[in-house]
Length: 79
Figure 1: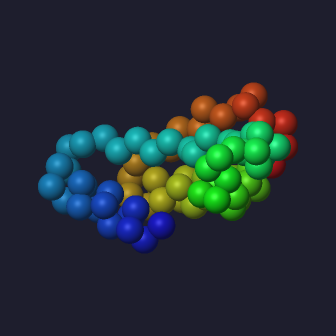
Figure 2: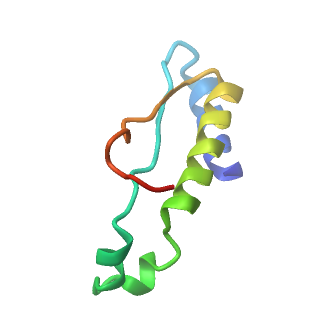
């Protein structure tokens, strides 16, 4: 998260008029993901962890004066 914030602060420093828009990470379909050939890369991605990450992104948006957008309503029935 600190690297993400560093990048946003650099953008803000070089382009102070820019609007910053941060999007929530999309949820995953965990049962399907377990069968994926990319399972090694995504095995730690659970909807609970993604929700925690999204809370951090939302707080980051507030710290850097950006907007936070979560378009995930209806994409998951669990957290």
